[in-house]
Amino acid sequence: MIMGCSGSGKSTLSTKLGQILNLPIIHLDKHYWRPDWVSTPDEEWHRIAQELTMEDKWIIDGNYSGTMDIRFKRADLIIYLDMPRWLCLYRVIKRRIIYHNKTRPDMHEGCLEKIDLEFLQWVWNFKRKNRKGILEKLEQVNEEKEIIIINKPRQLDELIKSLEKE
Image (cartoon, rainbow, N blue to C red):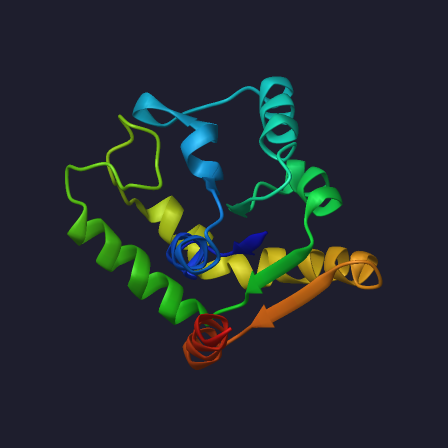
């Protein structure tokens, strides 16, 4: 299970890990968003999240705090990408330029890449508003789950290289 702010590298990491470990990848954004950025209703979203995690093996990326506990129960390993906010902001702006008028591979078809002030503020304030709650949840499952917290791109590169060697 991979979580972190938008632009932290969740989808990129899940794709790389999926290739290295030969595991199926589940991008939560692809299942949550409908064309034109219409969200899935809560009750249906909980059912979908439950179904997505019923397989024995997977790599899943995304946040969605309302269904985090569902994923925590089924995950063996939880990776939290706690990257600097300037890096996340840079990456979402870069991503917007790269995927201008296109749908990213990790998104539902019909969700053209977009960016607005509200989203940029969400990225900028993610650590201040969400980090404490995420760390508290991770602490609650620390005894039974393997947890990796990555704060720097270099640490992420080292993790990937170590997995490639294995």
